[in-house]
Image (tube, rainbow, N blue to C red):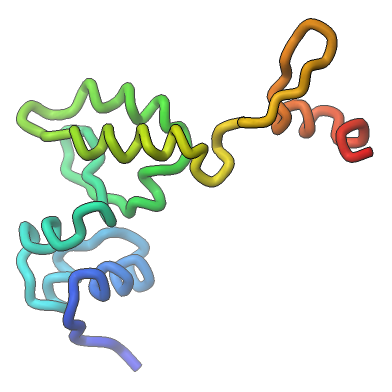
Length: 130
């Protein structure tokens, strides 16, 4: 069954990701009848605008994972007038929590150097698994 109408912006976002594999405001507007600005407001915290000149939005899952340090640096080059305070707060919270294992919290002391467990495990897994 093809869904032609939904009640909420969240439902429209789910269908947009499922059907279009992106945040597609035109499609979401067709589904729920809300304009782009209303959708952006309703989806605050669920979507983020990438800090670049061309306007592109991604889901929070995509934005708050990966290279968080790089994303924090990219905020410095955001277009004039773009408020990035909520971006920074969310990225810093994701960085602190080590979201989805992207940051190494376990360190092994081998000799004089500390080696990140995830990096070390990739190089010599047999020694760590014993």
